[in-house]
Length: 351
Image 1 (tube, rainbow, N blue to C red):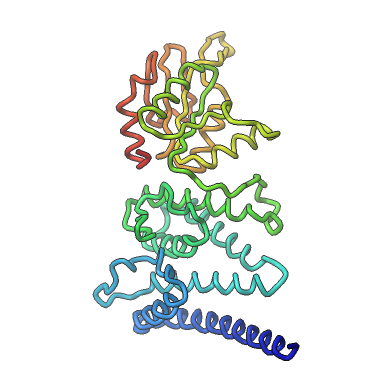
Image 2 (image 1 turned 90 degrees about the horizontal axis):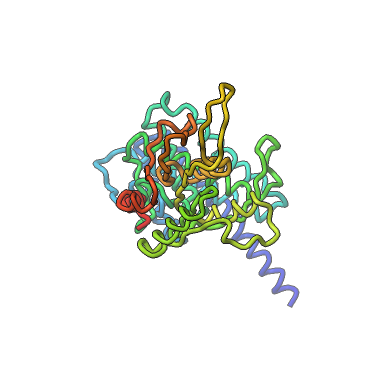
């Protein structure tokens, strides 16, 4: 019995060793193909044939795999994406073999920093270079982050494919959303995160398409009107923070817990707080929590998935940072903007 067990363990070790060598050799093949364009198509076809037999979803997320055979052009985009997938598979293998998650965490952090770099200097880069990075990034993380394609312009749900042939503005917005999701992935294990990245508790909650967050101030009648409209007319699930159980959480923890599940947010600006300037002039503005929560959703979902509903008033002032952003104006009832609300939800594919 002991001999059989030892033979079995040896066989497992050898299989594991061969698997690692296979990944390492195929990564080298990718490097050779990237340096020699003539090898790119042949390498692409061999690797696809090999790894699809192991994982039927291996092609998922690879750029242009839906429409292959592109006039003898270089397969560099595809090879880069495959190489990134193989590298992550190798890191995952080594993660099981060693005591630390350093390798995989470093990979996440490296890609996170690259995202921030491209976003920060977006206008100075050739859009072709950004599209190449985008293709590799999405192919790498589509099997790791379940919500990666949510609210992403150009994402094909059926094929799990991220089309990079989109406007520059949409590409920039997509990168911002992907960066936020990559940051959440990093935060699932804080043991390797550098001190300069602030810690935010994350439950790795999946975004639910039907969940719509309502940001509001003191005017209960207005948010209840919007709540009823969303629930009864558009058949979605409105989330109002005060209506959710506390469960011993702090305010910010409770907000993040429910906000992270939402695919869209409405911010109702009502004249709640009075402000008196040095010259004695008075005006009203929305509550600070409304501005804070609005900013959170801008950062995590992106502006296309947040809508401001502003109650018009002679003395109701909009914060200067928000002056240029389009918003829906109403006088007495939110329902005055019913058709525009419907239009926004349809544009975001919520309804």
